Length: 404
Image (cartoon, rainbow, N blue to C red; front, side, top):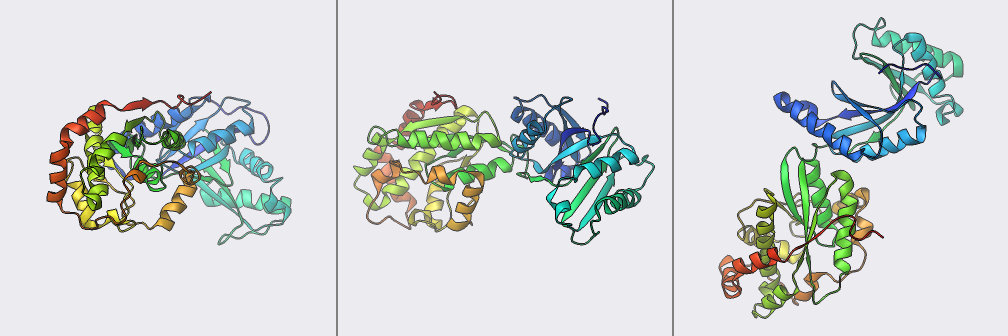
Protein backbone atom coordinates (compact mmCIF):
# COMPACT_ATOMS: atom_id res chain seq x y z
CA UNK A 1 0.00 0.00 0.00
CA UNK A 2 1.80 3.11 -1.19
CA UNK A 3 1.35 6.70 -0.07
CA UNK A 4 -0.75 8.48 -2.65
CA UNK A 5 -0.11 11.92 -4.01
CA UNK A 6 -2.54 14.68 -3.09
CA UNK A 7 -2.56 17.38 -0.45
CA UNK A 8 0.59 17.95 1.56
CA UNK A 9 -1.16 16.39 4.55
CA UNK A 10 -1.49 12.97 2.93
CA UNK A 11 -4.10 10.44 4.04
CA UNK A 12 -5.56 10.18 7.57
CA UNK A 13 -4.69 7.04 9.56
CA UNK A 14 -4.65 5.95 13.20
CA UNK A 15 -1.62 4.89 15.23
CA UNK A 16 -2.06 2.73 18.34
CA UNK A 17 0.65 2.66 20.99
CA UNK A 18 0.91 -0.49 23.09
CA UNK A 19 1.86 -0.58 26.75
CA UNK A 20 2.08 -3.66 28.92
CA UNK A 21 1.82 -5.95 25.90
CA UNK A 22 5.35 -5.11 24.73
CA UNK A 23 6.78 -6.43 28.01
CA UNK A 24 5.51 -9.98 27.51
CA UNK A 25 8.77 -11.46 26.21
CA UNK A 26 8.36 -14.75 24.38
CA UNK A 27 4.57 -14.60 24.75
CA UNK A 28 4.33 -11.13 23.24
CA UNK A 29 3.25 -12.39 19.82
CA UNK A 30 0.25 -14.19 21.33
CA UNK A 31 -0.88 -11.04 23.13
CA UNK A 32 -0.44 -8.96 19.98
CA UNK A 33 -2.44 -11.47 17.92
CA UNK A 34 -5.25 -11.30 20.46
CA UNK A 35 -5.14 -7.50 20.45
CA UNK A 36 -5.28 -7.30 16.65
CA UNK A 37 -8.28 -9.64 16.67
CA UNK A 38 -10.03 -7.44 19.25
CA UNK A 39 -9.29 -4.32 17.20
CA UNK A 40 -10.77 -5.89 14.08
CA UNK A 41 -13.85 -6.91 16.06
CA UNK A 42 -14.30 -3.39 17.43
CA UNK A 43 -13.93 -1.89 13.93
CA UNK A 44 -16.08 -4.41 12.07
CA UNK A 45 -18.29 -1.58 10.76
CA UNK A 46 -15.33 0.22 9.15
CA UNK A 47 -13.01 -0.60 6.26
CA UNK A 48 -9.65 -0.70 7.99
CA UNK A 49 -6.34 -2.41 7.28
CA UNK A 50 -4.50 -3.39 10.48
CA UNK A 51 -0.70 -3.48 10.32
CA UNK A 52 1.60 -4.50 13.16
CA UNK A 53 4.82 -2.58 13.75
CA UNK A 54 7.31 -2.74 16.62
CA UNK A 55 5.33 -1.51 19.61
CA UNK A 56 2.82 0.20 17.30
CA UNK A 57 -0.25 -0.87 15.37
CA UNK A 58 -1.18 1.22 12.33
CA UNK A 59 -4.74 1.42 11.04
CA UNK A 60 -4.86 2.37 7.36
CA UNK A 61 -8.12 3.70 5.96
CA UNK A 62 -9.23 3.63 2.32
CA UNK A 63 -7.96 6.44 0.11
CA UNK A 64 -10.17 9.50 0.32
CA UNK A 65 -11.55 8.67 3.78
CA UNK A 66 -13.06 11.73 5.42
CA UNK A 67 -11.44 13.09 8.55
CA UNK A 68 -14.68 12.55 10.45
CA UNK A 69 -14.54 8.82 9.74
CA UNK A 70 -10.92 8.64 10.88
CA UNK A 71 -11.89 10.45 14.08
CA UNK A 72 -14.71 7.94 14.68
CA UNK A 73 -12.29 5.05 14.19
CA UNK A 74 -9.84 6.59 16.66
CA UNK A 75 -12.59 7.13 19.24
CA UNK A 76 -13.94 3.60 18.83
CA UNK A 77 -10.58 1.87 19.15
CA UNK A 78 -9.66 3.93 22.24
CA UNK A 79 -12.07 1.66 24.15
CA UNK A 80 -10.11 -1.50 23.33
CA UNK A 81 -8.01 -2.69 26.32
CA UNK A 82 -4.33 -3.23 25.56
CA UNK A 83 -3.82 0.19 23.92
CA UNK A 84 -2.40 3.12 25.89
CA UNK A 85 -2.48 5.91 23.29
CA UNK A 86 -4.44 6.52 20.11
CA UNK A 87 -3.11 9.07 17.61
CA UNK A 88 -5.12 10.43 14.71
CA UNK A 89 -2.21 10.81 12.29
CA UNK A 90 -1.34 11.69 8.73
CA UNK A 91 0.41 9.20 6.50
CA UNK A 92 2.88 10.90 4.20
CA UNK A 93 5.80 10.09 1.92
CA UNK A 94 9.06 9.23 3.67
CA UNK A 95 10.83 12.33 2.40
CA UNK A 96 12.20 15.30 4.42
CA UNK A 97 10.56 17.88 2.14
CA UNK A 98 7.18 16.11 2.21
CA UNK A 99 7.35 15.77 6.01
CA UNK A 100 8.16 19.47 6.42
CA UNK A 101 5.31 20.59 4.15
CA UNK A 102 2.89 18.32 5.96
CA UNK A 103 3.93 19.68 9.35
CA UNK A 104 3.31 23.24 8.19
CA UNK A 105 -0.10 22.27 6.83
CA UNK A 106 -1.04 20.19 9.89
CA UNK A 107 -0.84 23.04 12.40
CA UNK A 108 -1.91 25.88 10.08
CA UNK A 109 -5.40 26.35 11.55
CA UNK A 110 -4.62 25.24 15.11
CA UNK A 111 -5.41 27.30 18.20
CA UNK A 112 -1.74 27.10 19.20
CA UNK A 113 -0.63 28.95 16.07
CA UNK A 114 -3.36 31.55 16.59
CA UNK A 115 -2.11 32.34 20.09
CA UNK A 116 1.60 32.06 19.30
CA UNK A 117 2.12 29.03 21.56
CA UNK A 118 5.48 27.51 22.46
CA UNK A 119 6.24 24.40 20.41
CA UNK A 120 8.61 21.47 19.95
CA UNK A 121 9.19 18.79 17.33
CA UNK A 122 9.81 15.18 18.42
CA UNK A 123 10.98 12.72 15.79
CA UNK A 124 11.52 8.99 15.93
CA UNK A 125 13.14 6.84 13.27
CA UNK A 126 11.99 3.26 13.25
CA UNK A 127 13.71 2.97 9.87
CA UNK A 128 17.38 3.77 10.50
CA UNK A 129 18.03 4.02 6.74
CA UNK A 130 16.28 7.38 6.63
CA UNK A 131 18.92 9.97 5.63
CA UNK A 132 18.29 12.37 8.54
CA UNK A 133 18.77 11.50 12.18
CA UNK A 134 15.96 12.31 14.61
CA UNK A 135 17.60 15.50 15.92
CA UNK A 136 18.37 16.65 12.37
CA UNK A 137 14.75 16.15 11.32
CA UNK A 138 13.63 17.99 14.47
CA UNK A 139 15.77 20.99 13.53
CA UNK A 140 14.65 20.97 9.90
CA UNK A 141 10.93 20.85 10.65
CA UNK A 142 11.14 23.04 13.75
CA UNK A 143 13.13 25.71 11.91
CA UNK A 144 10.59 25.82 9.09
CA UNK A 145 7.68 26.11 11.56
CA UNK A 146 9.49 28.92 13.34
CA UNK A 147 10.18 30.74 10.06
CA UNK A 148 6.61 30.28 8.81
CA UNK A 149 4.58 31.11 11.91
CA UNK A 150 7.08 32.73 14.26
CA UNK A 151 6.25 30.33 17.10
CA UNK A 152 8.78 30.24 19.93
CA UNK A 153 10.62 26.96 20.53
CA UNK A 154 10.36 25.37 23.98
CA UNK A 155 11.84 21.88 24.29
CA UNK A 156 11.09 21.58 28.03
CA UNK A 157 7.43 22.53 28.33
CA UNK A 158 5.92 22.98 24.87
CA UNK A 159 2.25 23.83 24.49
CA UNK A 160 2.25 22.21 21.04
CA UNK A 161 4.27 19.13 20.09
CA UNK A 162 4.58 17.96 16.51
CA UNK A 163 5.38 14.24 16.45
CA UNK A 164 7.07 12.61 13.47
CA UNK A 165 7.57 8.85 13.20
CA UNK A 166 9.55 7.53 10.25
CA UNK A 167 8.58 3.95 9.47
CA UNK A 168 9.54 1.34 6.92
CA UNK A 169 7.36 2.53 4.03
CA UNK A 170 6.07 5.94 5.12
CA UNK A 171 6.17 8.64 7.77
CA UNK A 172 3.45 9.49 10.28
CA UNK A 173 2.70 12.96 11.58
CA UNK A 174 0.46 13.93 14.51
CA UNK A 175 0.12 16.46 17.32
CA UNK A 176 -1.96 14.85 20.04
CA UNK A 177 -3.81 11.73 21.02
CA UNK A 178 -6.55 10.04 22.95
CA UNK A 179 -5.80 8.03 26.09
CA UNK A 180 -6.45 4.32 25.66
CA UNK A 181 -7.63 1.85 28.28
CA UNK A 182 -4.21 0.29 28.88
CA UNK A 183 -3.99 -3.15 30.43
CA UNK A 184 -4.09 -6.41 28.48
CA UNK A 185 -6.18 -7.55 25.50
CA UNK A 186 -9.53 -9.05 26.49
CA UNK A 187 -9.38 -12.84 26.21
CA UNK A 188 -5.65 -13.12 26.88
CA UNK A 189 -6.20 -14.16 30.51
CA UNK A 190 -9.22 -16.46 30.24
CA UNK A 191 -12.94 -16.12 30.98
CA UNK A 192 -14.77 -15.08 34.16
CA UNK A 193 -18.36 -14.58 35.29
CA UNK A 194 -19.28 -11.29 36.97
CA UNK A 195 -22.13 -11.06 39.47
CA UNK A 196 -23.80 -7.88 38.19
CA UNK A 197 -26.16 -5.97 40.45
CA UNK A 198 -27.75 -2.70 39.45
CA UNK A 199 -25.35 -0.80 41.70
CA UNK A 200 -22.22 1.23 41.12
CA UNK A 201 -19.55 -1.25 42.16
CA UNK A 202 -20.02 -4.44 40.13
CA UNK A 203 -19.83 -2.82 36.65
CA UNK A 204 -16.54 -1.16 37.63
CA UNK A 205 -15.21 -4.48 38.94
CA UNK A 206 -16.11 -6.17 35.63
CA UNK A 207 -14.40 -3.39 33.66
CA UNK A 208 -11.24 -3.68 35.73
CA UNK A 209 -10.99 -7.41 35.07
CA UNK A 210 -11.52 -6.86 31.34
CA UNK A 211 -8.46 -4.61 31.47
CA UNK A 212 -6.52 -7.51 32.99
CA UNK A 213 -7.33 -9.66 29.95
CA UNK A 214 -10.41 -11.55 31.17
CA UNK A 215 -13.38 -12.02 28.88
CA UNK A 216 -16.31 -11.30 31.19
CA UNK A 217 -19.83 -12.73 31.08
CA UNK A 218 -22.55 -11.36 33.36
CA UNK A 219 -25.04 -12.91 35.79
CA UNK A 220 -27.81 -10.80 37.28
CA UNK A 221 -30.06 -11.90 40.16
CA UNK A 222 -33.58 -10.51 39.86
CA UNK A 223 -36.17 -10.40 42.64
CA UNK A 224 -38.83 -11.71 40.24
CA UNK A 225 -41.62 -12.67 40.91
CA UNK A 226 -41.67 -10.24 43.86
CA UNK A 227 -40.15 -7.28 41.99
CA UNK A 228 -40.65 -5.80 38.53
CA UNK A 229 -38.33 -6.17 35.54
CA UNK A 230 -36.70 -2.77 36.16
CA UNK A 231 -33.46 -4.26 37.48
CA UNK A 232 -33.19 -6.50 34.39
CA UNK A 233 -33.45 -3.50 32.05
CA UNK A 234 -30.83 -1.75 34.17
CA UNK A 235 -28.48 -4.75 34.07
CA UNK A 236 -28.96 -4.94 30.32
CA UNK A 237 -28.10 -1.23 29.95
CA UNK A 238 -24.93 -1.71 32.02
CA UNK A 239 -23.82 -4.71 29.94
CA UNK A 240 -24.53 -2.82 26.74
CA UNK A 241 -22.32 0.02 27.98
CA UNK A 242 -19.51 -2.31 29.07
CA UNK A 243 -19.70 -4.26 25.82
CA UNK A 244 -17.73 -1.56 24.00
CA UNK A 245 -14.63 -2.72 25.88
CA UNK A 246 -14.84 -6.36 24.78
CA UNK A 247 -17.68 -7.10 22.34
CA UNK A 248 -19.95 -10.16 22.24
CA UNK A 249 -20.92 -9.79 25.92
CA UNK A 250 -23.45 -12.23 27.38
CA UNK A 251 -25.98 -11.58 30.14
CA UNK A 252 -27.96 -14.17 32.09
CA UNK A 253 -30.72 -13.40 34.59
CA UNK A 254 -31.65 -15.60 37.56
CA UNK A 255 -35.21 -15.30 38.98
CA UNK A 256 -34.11 -15.24 42.60
CA UNK A 257 -37.18 -14.02 44.51
CA UNK A 258 -38.51 -17.40 45.69
CA UNK A 259 -35.07 -18.48 46.89
CA UNK A 260 -34.81 -15.26 48.88
CA UNK A 261 -38.21 -15.94 50.40
CA UNK A 262 -36.97 -19.36 51.54
CA UNK A 263 -33.89 -17.80 53.16
CA UNK A 264 -36.03 -15.23 54.94
CA UNK A 265 -38.34 -17.97 56.20
CA UNK A 266 -35.36 -19.73 57.81
CA UNK A 267 -35.66 -17.32 60.75
CA UNK A 268 -31.97 -16.33 60.75
CA UNK A 269 -32.62 -12.65 60.14
CA UNK A 270 -29.10 -11.31 60.86
CA UNK A 271 -27.47 -14.00 58.70
CA UNK A 272 -29.91 -13.64 55.80
CA UNK A 273 -27.73 -11.30 53.73
CA UNK A 274 -24.62 -13.52 53.95
CA UNK A 275 -26.68 -16.68 53.39
CA UNK A 276 -28.16 -15.07 50.28
CA UNK A 277 -24.72 -14.04 49.10
CA UNK A 278 -23.39 -17.56 49.48
CA UNK A 279 -26.32 -18.96 47.50
CA UNK A 280 -25.68 -16.42 44.75
CA UNK A 281 -22.04 -17.52 44.60
CA UNK A 282 -23.00 -21.20 44.51
CA UNK A 283 -25.41 -20.49 41.66
CA UNK A 284 -22.80 -18.41 39.84
CA UNK A 285 -20.26 -21.22 40.23
CA UNK A 286 -22.69 -23.69 38.68
CA UNK A 287 -23.29 -21.32 35.75
CA UNK A 288 -19.55 -20.69 35.43
CA UNK A 289 -18.86 -24.42 35.06
CA UNK A 290 -21.45 -24.61 32.28
CA UNK A 291 -19.94 -21.72 30.28
CA UNK A 292 -16.35 -22.72 31.10
CA UNK A 293 -15.55 -19.62 33.11
CA UNK A 294 -12.57 -20.00 35.41
CA UNK A 295 -13.36 -17.41 38.09
CA UNK A 296 -16.10 -15.23 39.57
CA UNK A 297 -15.99 -11.43 39.86
CA UNK A 298 -17.73 -9.34 42.53
CA UNK A 299 -17.73 -5.65 43.40
CA UNK A 300 -16.88 -6.12 47.09
CA UNK A 301 -14.97 -3.29 48.78
CA UNK A 302 -13.61 -4.06 52.23
CA UNK A 303 -15.66 -2.39 54.96
CA UNK A 304 -17.92 -0.45 52.59
CA UNK A 305 -21.08 -2.06 54.03
CA UNK A 306 -21.64 -4.31 57.01
CA UNK A 307 -21.72 -7.48 54.91
CA UNK A 308 -18.25 -6.74 53.51
CA UNK A 309 -16.19 -7.30 56.62
CA UNK A 310 -13.15 -9.55 56.43
CA UNK A 311 -14.97 -12.28 58.38
CA UNK A 312 -17.99 -12.16 56.07
CA UNK A 313 -15.85 -12.12 52.93
CA UNK A 314 -14.05 -15.21 54.22
CA UNK A 315 -17.43 -16.87 54.82
CA UNK A 316 -18.41 -16.11 51.23
CA UNK A 317 -15.17 -17.54 49.84
CA UNK A 318 -15.92 -20.74 51.72
CA UNK A 319 -19.13 -21.25 49.71
CA UNK A 320 -17.40 -22.06 46.39
CA UNK A 321 -14.24 -23.59 44.99
CA UNK A 322 -13.73 -21.17 42.11
CA UNK A 323 -11.51 -18.15 42.80
CA UNK A 324 -13.40 -14.91 43.45
CA UNK A 325 -11.84 -11.79 41.93
CA UNK A 326 -12.45 -8.60 43.94
CA UNK A 327 -10.64 -5.80 42.06
CA UNK A 328 -12.28 -3.05 44.16
CA UNK A 329 -11.37 -4.52 47.54
CA UNK A 330 -9.07 -1.64 48.54
CA UNK A 331 -10.98 1.26 46.96
CA UNK A 332 -13.36 3.62 48.73
CA UNK A 333 -16.72 4.72 47.35
CA UNK A 334 -15.41 8.02 46.00
CA UNK A 335 -12.73 6.25 43.96
CA UNK A 336 -15.20 3.70 42.62
CA UNK A 337 -17.70 6.41 41.65
CA UNK A 338 -14.98 8.36 39.84
CA UNK A 339 -14.13 5.34 37.72
CA UNK A 340 -17.81 4.56 37.10
CA UNK A 341 -18.25 8.11 35.87
CA UNK A 342 -15.23 7.80 33.58
CA UNK A 343 -16.40 4.57 31.93
CA UNK A 344 -19.99 5.77 31.64
CA UNK A 345 -21.80 3.40 34.01
CA UNK A 346 -22.49 5.76 36.93
CA UNK A 347 -25.53 7.46 35.42
CA UNK A 348 -27.11 4.06 34.67
CA UNK A 349 -26.31 2.67 38.13
CA UNK A 350 -27.93 5.66 39.82
CA UNK A 351 -31.29 5.03 38.11
CA UNK A 352 -33.96 3.81 40.57
CA UNK A 353 -34.97 0.16 40.48
CA UNK A 354 -36.29 -2.59 42.73
CA UNK A 355 -33.07 -4.34 43.72
CA UNK A 356 -33.50 -7.94 44.85
CA UNK A 357 -31.39 -7.23 47.95
CA UNK A 358 -34.14 -4.99 49.35
CA UNK A 359 -36.24 -8.11 49.87
CA UNK A 360 -33.79 -9.23 52.56
CA UNK A 361 -32.90 -6.06 54.38
CA UNK A 362 -32.76 -6.78 58.12
CA UNK A 363 -32.60 -3.95 60.61
CA UNK A 364 -29.06 -5.06 61.49
CA UNK A 365 -26.87 -7.45 59.53
CA UNK A 366 -24.31 -9.84 60.99
CA UNK A 367 -20.75 -8.50 60.64
CA UNK A 368 -18.97 -11.63 61.89
CA UNK A 369 -20.88 -14.51 60.36
CA UNK A 370 -19.82 -18.00 61.41
CA UNK A 371 -19.41 -20.46 58.59
CA UNK A 372 -20.99 -23.34 60.53
CA UNK A 373 -24.13 -21.28 61.21
CA UNK A 374 -24.39 -20.51 57.50
CA UNK A 375 -23.90 -24.16 56.55
CA UNK A 376 -26.70 -25.10 58.93
CA UNK A 377 -29.07 -22.76 57.06
CA UNK A 378 -27.88 -24.24 53.76
CA UNK A 379 -28.53 -27.78 54.90
CA UNK A 380 -32.12 -26.85 55.71
CA UNK A 381 -32.50 -25.24 52.29
CA UNK A 382 -30.58 -27.98 50.45
CA UNK A 383 -28.53 -25.11 48.98
CA UNK A 384 -26.45 -27.25 46.62
CA UNK A 385 -29.54 -28.59 44.85
CA UNK A 386 -31.20 -25.17 44.96
CA UNK A 387 -28.17 -23.62 43.22
CA UNK A 388 -28.46 -26.18 40.42
CA UNK A 389 -32.19 -25.43 40.06
CA UNK A 390 -31.49 -21.71 39.92
CA UNK A 391 -28.79 -22.26 37.29
CA UNK A 392 -31.32 -24.29 35.29
CA UNK A 393 -33.75 -21.37 35.41
CA UNK A 394 -31.44 -18.70 34.00
CA UNK A 395 -32.59 -16.74 30.97
CA UNK A 396 -30.07 -15.42 28.43
CA UNK A 397 -30.39 -11.85 27.17
CA UNK A 398 -28.75 -10.79 23.92
CA UNK A 399 -27.78 -7.18 23.38
CA UNK A 400 -30.48 -6.68 20.77
CA UNK A 401 -33.29 -8.16 22.89
CA UNK A 402 -34.61 -4.75 23.96
CA UNK A 403 -33.96 -2.86 20.74
CA UNK A 404 -37.03 -1.58 18.90
